Length: 250
Ligand SMILES: *Cc1c(COP(=O)(O)O)cnc(C)c1O
Image (cartoon, rainbow, N blue to C red; front, side, top):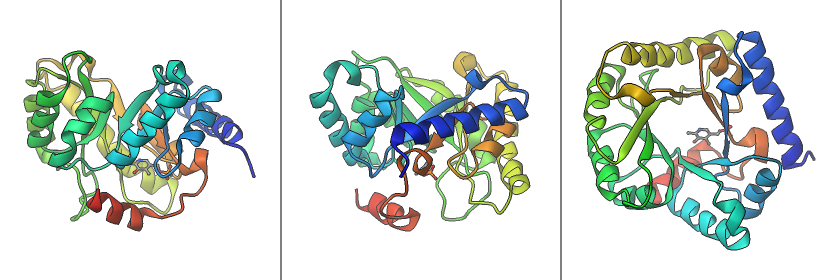
């Protein structure tokens, strides 16, 4: 079985090839290692191979993992950026505000407001992406594209947040063309908001799109940050169905 370091090298090569194919520079696309369900030792393996940005879905699991990593390697742990990429319920906003550098899954003002109110004064503003539901799945999280600009304008008023861009999780699509079409919807919305002239968009620079299965299409559409889990850490011991069930419980 390939090691985490080997898998990371493979994923970085995929990103570089996708950038070349799209006529983009590889340093326009950051890699977020999605370590949900994997333990602190897996995070450290990736960190020893140069990875510093980690994505987590389950907030309590993530906070426990951060503490474990910090206890093992305090100096290295200070270099990490933890990104919350799972659903954020109201009763979890404080943990997100206190422990994460980024939250990608803000899809309503109430959650943004709480994150801003609860962001500790000694930390820099929390980096935010607005999650948008680009394929219209009825039970999916994400703001509707029609509401995104209003939400952007409201979030820009919140003092302890730094609004960075959009995030989307399109349904798995059968081929590259179908994946690209969905990612391009997010890209078009990203560009439209950038062109809207909304005051305070100075840091509007992040399009969080693409996972293990569709990162090439995401890069082709303009992703600046791909979120890769199984491609780095291997198969998770429970699937998206159980992921959702667990996230409801947490
Ligand atoms: C789990 C997850 C990922 C990583 O998925 P892989 O297919 O394992 O790469 C990316 N983004 C989000 C929001 C996730 O929940």
